[in-house]
Image 1: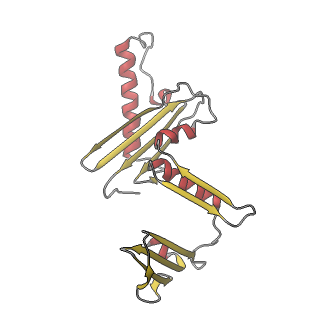
Image 2: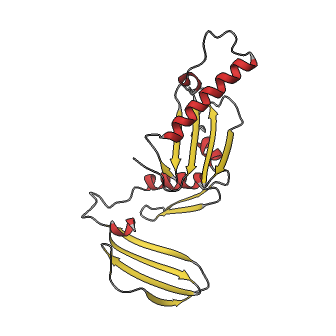
Image 3: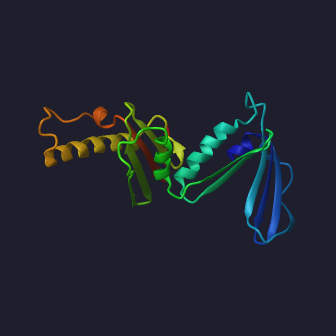
Length: 214
């Protein structure tokens, strides 16, 4: 619906129940009723659209922007395959994104050019009452933290309760371990969250019904 509203022209072709249906729209308004156009043994939907120049300053697609977003979606949805083809250049550019390992491979991607402090990527997930949370993390030898967070596949750049909750829990758990194991006996005080997250590469993905975005 959003793509339709932002398109000068849009055409949808649906293959379902052995038949093919097609409908065209102009700036969100149907040009004609839904029409049956043939038979098929396939299933799926094909959407073709042209962005509306009355809404956008430019209607030229940036392939790198699309590739980065589709790569994210493939990381966040294990098993999903997304193929992106840019037919404008010569030769044609094609990207094939498919990550069975999900956000574990996402963290590998973030740390691929960095010196990792441990080989094993820490991963855990939990589901409760239609909510799902996944976290994958690994430290590298850099001084900065990289936390990428998502709610229902949407990048929450400004963070949120899922990020602040993770940070607080990580600080508490690490300091508890230092205290109980005796490793931190020579420390005058516990480590701060900033100390612990130095060099951290982390991906947080949550699935929430009816989230509140700001």
